[in-house]
Length: 414
Ligand code: SF4
Image (cartoon, rainbow, N blue to C red; front, side, top):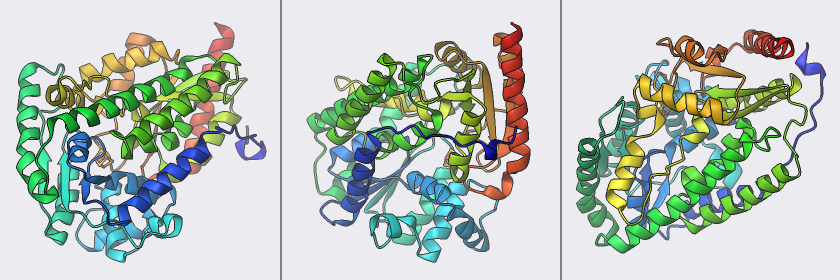
């Protein structure tokens, strides 16, 4: 089948316009100068930073924008010239290259002069060590205080020992946050932010779970767009309000049996990072082959269902340490099996991302082991989150179309 020849009528999620306005307001607020700015990793201690009144900026979100606009391809060589390998995290190299070139999509899309200047930088190596190197580049450049959380990694189970250790590391951030913000730590404010974050994250979970319905209303590709507020605005009322709106719309669609692909012949799970510069192409490719990509590890990474405002330290330490990317192969397998069942998955596509070893799970036999245990077939495609030199479009299309055809044939025969 030649996928380019078929036209797809796009399914419109009405809440998208609200989300775009919110994201625009968020970026503009970073430049207004009203609040001090904290830079934070995407699964870092955002709640604690917000409790000190910081506006929080997330360089990984900027990395995703660089990938989606394909500007990353112009910027990665700048970072390489300055000594970074072209094989390390392309969020890092694209972001540093963009900074060195003084160009960013934030200028064209939101009218900003550039990325906001940090007053404090915070990272959590629960996802990878790369963030420490990446953020230290900026701490050195801006001569800015930097605080880090280094939780134990690759655990089968997160025990009280690990939680206690991470709580201690969280608490060590307080003096620096107090000094930079000029505010004393306020436990009630911290609890309030954790509560708002919990309410938004549980709504985000409900949003994702609407696609357990056979007529799924949200695709993985749409999810990567609608996750913006849970990444950059968690801990605010705005994020909570947005996910209430989105959930209501999607639930109405479920009730009316309105799926994004009404005649889907199979249901696919996406494992690994998005290929940001090819989102639309990938979305069309799967839809045109009647395959609905209904769930992913990536979008689920911002479900922190352990948050509890009555136990803010331990619950945030636990939630940020228990995330999928920070777990052992064994723990990841259990989480994947649960998602396969819940979303009634027929096949898994693993994106083996060249520059993100940490969020690629096809290298140590997991696809085979998972197939042995669940019977669900899988496909590995090679690519990258931002660096399109590592992605072969023609080869990937052929592999994906063949994979979908095999699943659909097997379903007809069964
Ligand atoms: S998890 Fe991967 S993509 Fe994200 S910052 Fe780390 S290396 Fe980069």
